[in-house]
Amino acid sequence: MTDAPHSMTEQDCLVAIMVAVSVSDENIRTSELMTIETIVNHLPVFAKYDADRIKTVSSTVFDLFSEEDGLDALFGLVRDNLPERLFETAYALACDVAASDGRTREAELRLLEEIRYELDLDRLHAAAIERGARARYITL
Image (cartoon, rainbow, N blue to C red; front, side, top):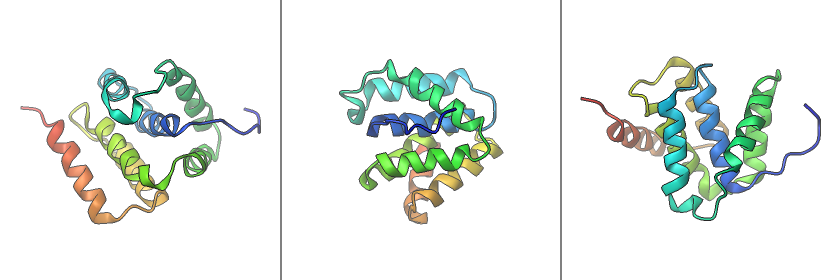
């Protein structure tokens, strides 16, 4: 990977966070990919987003995760390119991806904790977001 700066839009950052959660346990599940696709296709924040960029952003995340300090680099990109008003949105989308297969794994929980820390989210707000994701993706 080169040291050239990455050009990421606000929406790219949101996608990158979702992809990071999906790959955090080294097993990308179909339900997680479908959730990312559904989110990008339906949420207003992605209204003008080119969904073909998901592949490019995913490749960037994969490249970063192959580096020793890749997670720190990802958070740097997100903090540099995502306005603070979208930090809770990023966390909500991350929670949706983590919950989408009906089970949140240890690696996903650790990454969600790291996202909360890196984006300096209020713990009560984060708990409410987590509760909403759990409620949306509960299985019978």
